[in-house]
Image (cartoon, rainbow, N blue to C red; front, side, top):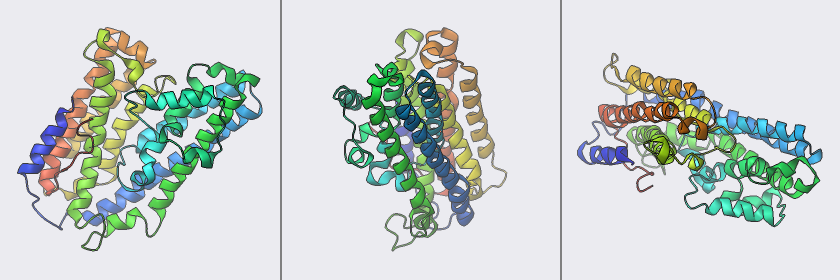
Length: 356
């Protein structure tokens, strides 16, 4: 597990940056990353969160099988929008615990789930402001998934689910607020985007262009590591008998494989849309194509694995297909962190997933 992290750490110790503040194409890379990748995807999440709040509101106002089905269907939009921007593991999402507020996962000991279950059992209906002042485990996508799909969720279709529905509506409101905060910071003239565009000695986060590039490299390699090791290997094991698919994110809603696909695709999109290849000394470098090929292999494999994750990995062929994706995911991470980083003089350095 987490074998990639040790490789990156060794690279960080052994390879010194080739340039301190002279990254080729830096301005274009940062502008494209922010304007063409981060902001549009953050906006997609914010918009999906607004729609995701409206569906539970309709369910609470008129509980029925139809409105429950609509609320469950609407849940997919913010989940997949979040999966498509989860790779942005830097910036405003790291302030005020927003990363965990959006989705508290992994919940290794089930502590967050138990908080959600206790809140439902107690019939609590905290308003959005009160909920956001409480545990992050109560206000994210995982909590809302349990309200809509977990044990006892069928009561949402009738009067008995009134309190549970009110809790779910508050969670959706908290998600909307957090997603809007993240987007507003990225769009603000004095927000994180300005810090990335203007590294220097007075910048509290980025002293050099190299440090900005390190943040981008680290985000992509961490996302690939999180997907391959924590989301896939740790949940499906080496064979169907060892699989524990109910440890995977969003298994209750049947969105696991869609999330995996969006996670993988987002890394390739960040590298390509963010024009990160501009920093390479050799314009004919094979690295961009190699990364794109690896990501495409993983995404196509996820697309061929049809059905809920627990059904897919119970079948030997399905299990092998999902497990296969870790090979190209590992390879893409090794290229970005082990070859691209040293090539441009910006090794990834500290990995926030070390020890997970």
